[in-house]
Amino acid sequence: MKAFAVIAGVLLFVSCSQELPTSPSQTRQTLKPVTEATHAGRVRAVSPPAGCVDLSGFYDVRYEGGCPTGGYLTSWELRQNGCEFSIDVNPDLPNVRGRVTGSAVSLSMTNGFIACTYSLDGTGTVSNGVIRAKVTGPTGGPCCGSGIDTVSLVATKR
Image 1 (tube, rainbow, N blue to C red):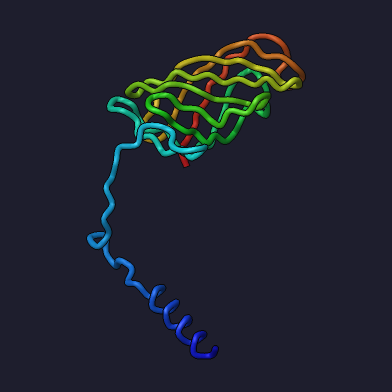
Image 2 (image 1 turned 90 degrees about the horizontal axis):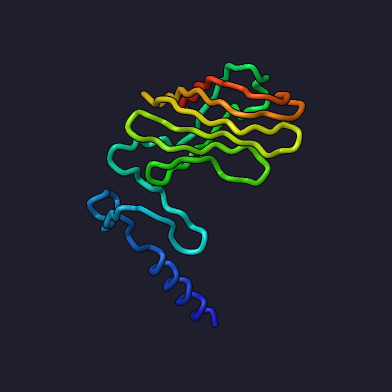
């Protein structure tokens, strides 16, 4: 029985001691263009087509406008699919989505949460990882009051 355990241990050691590649030239990977979702919930990163700036990543956002800015998201994690971008969509939570073409950005910010609602749309520009835009639309609830708000925003990529 001891001999069997020793042989099993040696076989395990030999099978686990295969050489791993030490340089990129030793690995054989084929890079494929990534354009859409894959199997069961796994999503590949999507490279934007020519003419669309890659906006995916984390942003710190500052606002100037009539509404107290505490009602708007101060941090965005943008995900991009082609020229379209958005943050994760959760019902009743603030949402940001838009489209980039060259350096032009169209942007929508919405929130369906009962205490603070808004639906703001507008345009802006993107340059060197900074999105500058002006959005306008109806607001409601105790956060912003009811009416129309116009907000200028600056989103800076981290």
